[in-house]
Amino acid sequence: MANVLAVTNQKGGVGKTTTTINLAASLALADQNVLIVDMDPQANLTSGIGRKGSFQPAGTVYEALTAENVTDVRDFVVATEVEGLSLLPADRNLTGAEVELVSLDDRERRLRPLLQQAKIEFDYVFIDTPPSLGFLTLNALVAADGVLIPLTCDYFALEGLAELMTTLRRVQASFNPELEISGVLLTMADNRTNLGQQVAKEVRDFFGEKVFDTSIPRNIRLAEAPSHGLPVILHDVRSKGAEAYLSLAKEFISRRQNCRKEET
Ligand code: ATP
Ligand code: MG
Image (cartoon, rainbow, N blue to C red; front, side, top):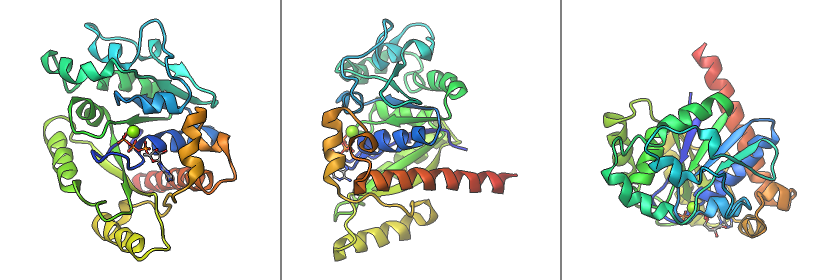
């Protein structure tokens, strides 16, 4: 079962970072021990959780990925304001990693050993990925047990999905046969419009059971929360956005319990 999840879609602005922060924080509130990993040189995850410029003496995810010798993940993890939620932070240096990784040994497998260690300490690990299918995203997919794909409910939602599916198959074939699609999440959903409903139906036809019943509505509190460096549950717990991510966390946990029952 997937405990390390890459939140991925090479399309920009679909809610990868928002989902990583808010699903992880909602799970932490439900007493889970959660690590979020910032694999995006934009470092939106790091600033969105209020940790811009924070890192341990060993450095950020950049140093962790490019170190000559295998490192201990605990040297890089920082705490957040949310109890039970930790962060492996990034900064702008990560931009260079995309190029530097090319010449390193095991360039696709730099993140995996670190997160294998993290699995011992954390119930869940979520990796926020950049809007591209380069080496940083590839490292996330090789390190992950599953992918969580956020999709916006607009006309272009399914655009580029074929490319993402091809990448996932390639990663499964070459590096990580266990990689599964753990879930598809409709974000910025507007059920009041015909287009919103139509796109949601198309996504459900294509991905079936993989699509979460919970969808995330467009909500201004979700967009504001990162400017306060907080997940939405600490910014405005009564907002529609907070409600949606809390119910996503609930569905996430109950789906996994059902999976476990099926496995035994
Ligand atoms: P990128 O590809 O650049 O990393 P992303 O996929 O991580 O983007 P986000 O940064 O999470 O996407 O979201 C894009 C923008 O939309 C942000 O300004 C965010 O605050 C806002 N946003 C995300 N989800 C919602 C929502 N449900 N309602 C309103 N605004 C949202
Ligand atoms: Mg992002």
